[in-house]
Image (cartoon, rainbow, N blue to C red; front, side, top):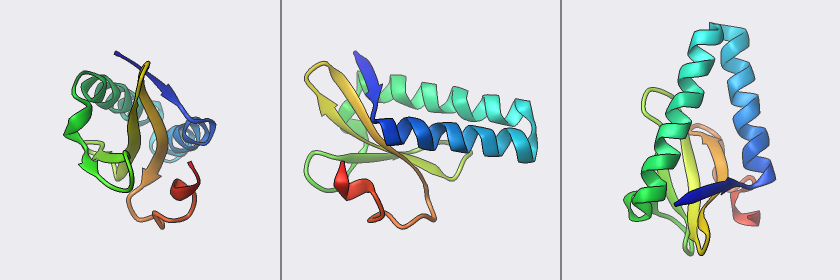
Length: 97
């Protein structure tokens, strides 16, 4: 199964990776991206693993990083809607997607 990113989720992922690279170095930024990919592959194979939120959306945390992926199953795979820092207000943009 495949996955795709909402344009805002893609931007959020890039911002987080740049933050880790700037503040903690390339190795930590790479670990963050590897963990993101690992979780996306896991959820693509098992979309029901995430915690249900609103509608058909689900949430799943990244291991070792304070981020969660908000996603929904889609006919052609998984749609990543949000890459959210866990202390960010969940109502900020998530409901618009």
